Amino acid sequence: MSGRIILQEQPHVIGQVKTAPLPGFEGIEAQPYDFFTPQPIKGARAYYLRNILHDWPDHKCKEILQNIRAGMTDESVLLIDEMVLSKRDAPWQATQLDMAMMTCLAAKERSEFEWRTLLGDAGFEVRSIRRYTEGCQDCVLVVAPAPE
Ligand SMILES: C[S@@+](CC[C@H](N)C(=O)[O-])C[C@H]1O[C@@H](n2cnc3c(N)ncnc32)[C@H](O)[C@@H]1O
Image (cartoon, rainbow, N blue to C red; front, top):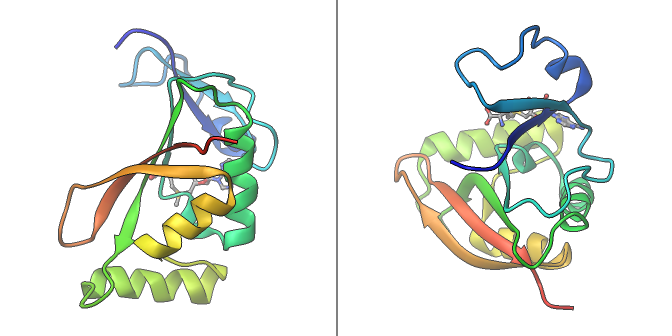
């Protein structure tokens, strides 16, 4: 791929990466970043979050999402790689993770309705939802800033 790929993590986590480039991931830059602060990378083609938002309640997710949104341009997309829970008969692996998120972090796994509500409240529109496993309901939500 052309362009830059930047891995952002909390300073004390990314600080454990002692070598550059990242071993096994040549070409990926490591950058300390707290996602509750403004996103320093402006106008990226894609921002990617995997299993980040399920650790947080809606009001904290909104802060994270709005910090990313402020850095996006019309060309940018946000890819959210998380579970999208079925309305009925979700697999036990998914529902037990939902319970764990609730009891440990006051957070949750989200249904399509809950994702659309959260993302709408944070100023995004959902362009597509691509499911890539059945068992654990893993999906990539492709989202973009909603028109003002
Ligand atoms: C559930 S893990 C997901 C890690 C990885 N994306 C994955 O899919 O395996 C959540 C990650 O969020 C990071 N994190 C927590 N708070 C953060 C913050 N305020 N800013 C940046 N990263 C944070 C944690 O260090 C942790 O690596």
